[in-house]
Length: 238
Image (cartoon, rainbow, N blue to C red; front, top):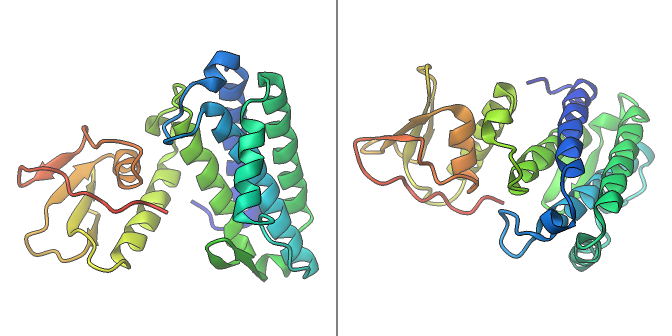
């Protein structure tokens, strides 16, 4: 998958279109139903995705202008905005998703080559602006799953699944005392090693399924463990 932010914005636009199609099929009862995220309805997930887009607009604006805009005013304000937006009617959710996505597209188009190299402050620390587009794509694709509305890991592109899997594996490997495991993609000799290789189980399966399991979105039922035994328990992602 490309790392060029402008090219990657095409992937964001495609993912947004898929999300909008799913959201357009949800009625009020659907939006009030539980998502895969504990304590959140589908309405919470959609409200989060809209405000997340606006948060990335803030960060891109900060990179372009040099003004120290935060992604969110505060964690409390972020939570309040999601809660306030969760119970809105379906048409309002859909309009908000479209408009916030359009604002993000416009903010990306306004970036100069130099501004993409600027460093901005995200809630998780400093980040080069060019990496924000990947972060938004990841938000859309993972939270689309969280809607529990017929979108599956099989709908992820192979490029997205592989990049997510590599990112999550690298994050786990950097943590203190990670569970040891070897991840092997179906049909490939390529492996990712987390922790120590000695006596570590090999977990094999499609890259999307491996990634979804590592981030807690799948129980791993379709994965094979060698030698036979239970799957390791990955620590909480993010």
